[in-house]
Length: 290
Ligand code: UTP
Image (cartoon, rainbow, N blue to C red):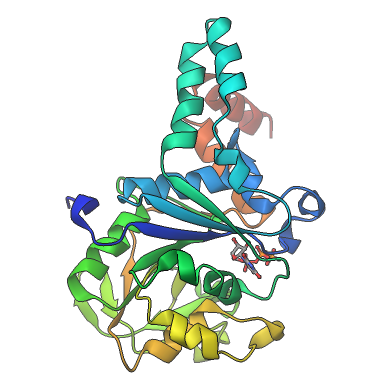
């Protein structure tokens, strides 16, 4: 497979980070989940990397009162000090972080749901197709998962969602989709259900935090009543669009870690640590001791 999204019409992404992060308490009392690191690189940086690799140039971060977007601000004092002390490579990395994409911060001061967070970015999207990335889903593969869904969106239009096969024991905790296959790893979604009991689940294809969307989604988000838990959910708006627009799911080719929970973050950390010879040896020695 080759993926070249340089010509994709989609150049905007929304990264919502204003949720309460309750599955990561107590640290999320003061640190937003999106700033928790996998070996020094915060989750939001992984999400931005995924977007930039797919040709995205403009990113809105929807944050609560605490700033996540400031992580991407230029830091000339820090860069200057690093250069003065001969650490040019690190200084270059700092410049790269603040120049990868244009970052806009949007405030969601009450956590009224991921759909509500997306709705707040309506003016930013300005009637163009866009992508949504949940930074607590880490997807690492040869090609960015955002690029993989944009490839399908550019050919079929409408809305496209990234999915992965999940354990049948977990389907009751996930959004699940089902429908006929239209090409390898792509289905036309006919059913989309939130957290179905195992015996009612139409498949084990779970939604995993990457969406390529048509701006028509906003019409539905604006009309949405608050759903489960008093929140506005993005999936409800996508379901509402299904009769009008093509809706596809792509089983993305990527290793996935649910970094919204400590064990997923630990898995992602081990994954990265194993690439470094010293840390890899530490893992091997520790496993032998166990
Ligand atoms: P989650 O469903 O993972 O919720 O949100 P959460 O609040 O982060 O975590 P838990 O379930 O309490 O542990 C998916 C994404 O949507 C954002 C979250 O920050 C996360 O990136 N979100 C959720 C918002 O931006 N606003 C909301 O009102 C809800």
